[in-house]
Length: 429
Image 1: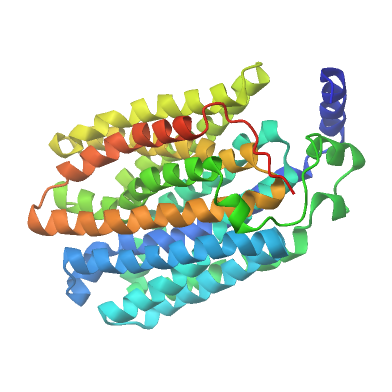
Image 2: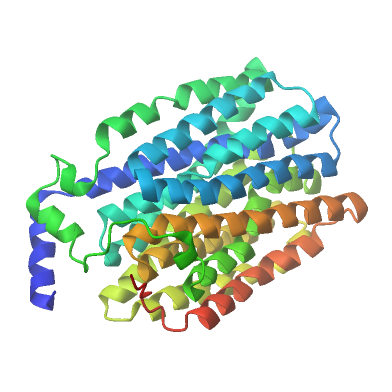
């Protein structure tokens, strides 16, 4: 389309409404719920270790089985949402993970806990493949990074809500009831999703002008592409290996950060809530800012290649002060450094998540994201066992923070080497 035509479509869409942002709101809400359910084990780590007699390695093994299921579920749901669509794919994933979350209230042993975490991992793995598939259906290229940044910010809101709400539920009703209450209360989301989500061309609330805005990019093939044609592309592995590098760091923040604050600064279950809230508020800003920055550069005339990679480079630099996190005796200085690192992670991640839709036709996006999520979860599995071993054998977080501060440079180097220009993939019939 010409610049004049693009401007006309944009102005028309602005006059008739923005239903696509309501879809982002639904994705945001689901991601909040996803991360509340996911992070509860991290917030409850000191309580569960004391109540059930876990070691650091026991906790690492439970996280490992969650991530094993996540690896399986991610690649599975990536394919499922390409075949049956984001609407039903997301609903199925949500039901699976919510039922597994509720089941946490009835388990006792490490093995039983690992089993319900496995079920949670299978279901939660569907969140991002389905969510990004939905964004790909509902947004043009120039808005996708911002839209993904907004719904990805739900991860941080979930991480904020969890330490504020869950400790009070635990004190009032016990940790078992806390799992049941949060699971039952959030189940209502799936009914809103099924009632409100359709593809834009099938939705009565989408005007012709907004539909034209959504569909302004070149038309992609709609038939799902076989994995054999997707997995052989360098661009698939640029995304997947980037995830392998950075996903383990986010897992570490999510599952070990509450325990780190509790032991390093002698905080109890009520006291580590405010520091965690501060960290994840910074993360929320990073998620939205990272998507906004690259989208802004594109609107200013920079190439997609420049916008995505420059944003990721700035984020990689912002993480580096975490090298010294273990040495900060002042709690709030540590919170600032860790918060900036988590914000940079989320900004980096928002841009990395956008690459499949930048590089591949819509019919392949879910599968590429599934492959990347599986590879990222495998990295998380390895890093979880490494973390448990380091803490049990050495008793310091310093080696872990060193890896965390380096991972983003490695990820960006891999992305650049495998796709130096971020040119769209040509998949011949």
